[in-house]
Amino acid sequence: MMDKLNDAVSSATYIVGGSLMIGDWLSILDAHAGAYGVLIAGATFVLNFMFQIIRLTRIKADDLDD
Image: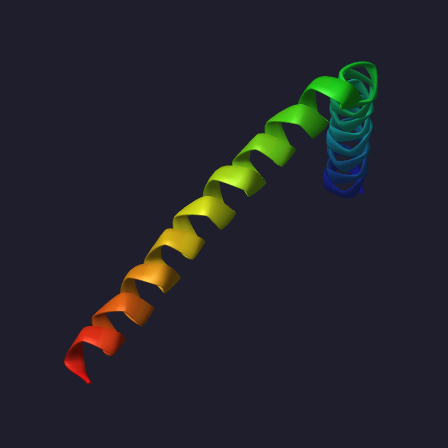
């Protein structure tokens, strides 16, 4: 009986602690949403630029092979 009670209290403690941590993380994201948006946009631009260079290099190589 006591083991089940200890397990239940332990589980509840982990759930509450995890919920508080996620809540704090979400409030940080909410407070700095603009900065994270700029970082994500910058990363998207860099990745797209890299893939376009790779694509153009392959097209150029294919044209030279013909």
